[in-house]
Image 1 (cartoon, rainbow, N blue to C red):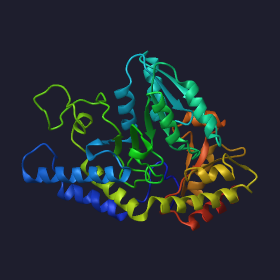
Image 2: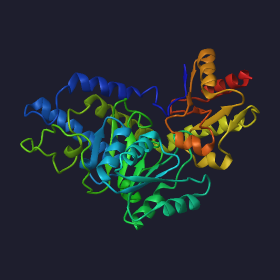
Image 3: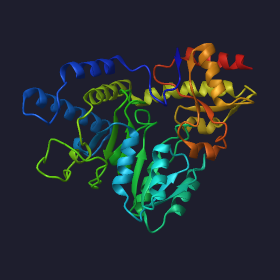
Length: 380
């Protein structure tokens, strides 16, 4: 099997991650912070060490500012529903995933908030920034922006958008689902108020674990209430992090697997990982540009600045047909459809057809790309 759907989830996982998950079940199958016996205390210490690993990797203010969530989607929901109150306004980009778009749409439909979509202008960061500025109104409380499109790879000027938000006393939330582990994210240098990450993508952790990183002391309303093992006599959730946002038993195998994934990425150097993946995408782009029946959505300039993702459509064929052909004939796994990002497809004119998305990982080889190119050449 040639696996090229790493924007959905990376596969395979590094051996270190597989071992960490197995070892968590075998050696740390105890509830951290819920008991005074030594095994529970040891497990709690391992969780704290994982927080420290995450905090150091993203240069978060402290280990306590690291919140473990079941997914990036839940992290985003926690920010959106924890920050915004009745009458507030939020600005999102025209490339946002449904984890953001559906959430703000639901809140607007319920009459709680309003939201605006700021158009991203590919290759023109100045106009993109101006579009965000024009979307601001007196009730704007939050910007939410993906660092790079999960469909087309287009990168947004998130550091500058964060600075713009702060100049108007607006909070900024970065959706790093597709970029954490690939692009540099320095919370203190960049000033992000919130960073939401998927642990199972380019951080190479297992499924079922995500991150919410807090850049300041903003007190979010909890998305979930319940037991924390702290302040148990109080019927209100604790007023300190991380306990305030971590109700219920933590996902120990996920947390320790994610820690191992981050350590793996750090050992390989995210910059080197990105260079390798972008080299593969550039070669794919260069050769597919000569396939007359294929339409690409990047050019030589945008591909260099983008995340290592490439989408295309095939003449006279919907994306799912191409996906089935590649899977059945060549055992190649790619993603077709709308990729849970209809805003991005509407912007690029592919809402009806969807696209075929290619996304390599550090384990993808040049030969994998050659086989893909050969199979697409045989398609016509």
